[in-house]
Length: 249
Image 1: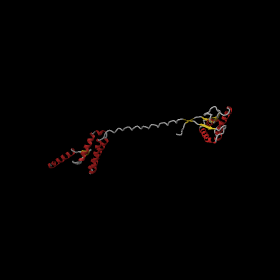
Image 2: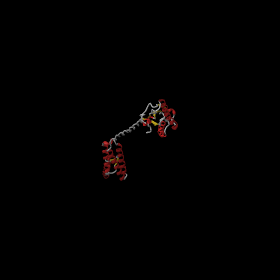
Image 3: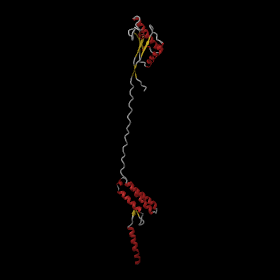
Image 4: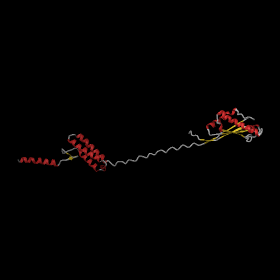
């Protein structure tokens, strides 16, 4: 009987020691007295991360590292050492990442978009004052318009058509040979001759043209020479000056 008692004493001692001295890694009880160093290294890495300033910024990484440690322990005791080692390595990396966590960077406000200044307004077109005159000379005691003045009169007609608000006053003049009364009538005929030319040849409205005869009262040259008298036998057409604004630009 004593032999049986002596056999039970070391057996109970062994059971007591193995039960009371059981070790755990990641909440999983060890099933052997020796485990790979990876277990202790991983637990140390997680513990260090938990004490680091980064713990409050990345608690989810530390929680994930612990979860992987638990999986590794279960896998290890299921005899899959390679997968356990991989899981432990991943857990250590997460713990290291958690240590380096910090506050999220404050996003800088996007630079204000400054719209380009509007283009300067186009300058208002500058009014231009357009004026035109007409001077035609006549032969002695004649009032007919010479053919050589056709193009000159045509330019006046074009001006009047382009600016319908303009009007013209045709003034007739003579040299001083003959009586005053005769030269007044001659100067009238000369003015009327140019007026009719504008109306009949170029279609200018009659109401836009008026005439006035001055005889020899307004000479522009001496009547003592043939050249001077030729200059005085004339008409002067006074055409309204037009304030013109070019809006084509």
